[in-house]
Image (cartoon, rainbow, N blue to C red; front, side, top):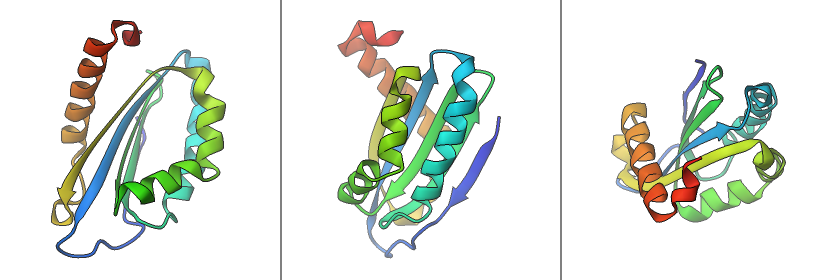
Length: 141
């Protein structure tokens, strides 16, 4: 299960708050794993240069077809700018048909608490997935 370690593209301003985004992507088929993994590396390269990116990590559970992302941002605007830019925008659009289920969760932390712990992030992703399923039972699979 490869994990790309936490990187810090831009230094955080002391005393500020960071927006955290954690996500889980579940693929429909294991045959989609190589393509998803390769495409995710291009988005990884982009986040490492993105203005406003304070930190990021990626975990790939290749034999389960599950990918986790964890990133921190100066603001929601910085995150949205990254998400709308290439290659991220094209990667996500192109991979959408391969997705079985995706979960996203957001919260804020003081920058002094960076980097974010994967255990906490996965707990929050699981809580969000349960909340999403409660709102729309069809979203569970």
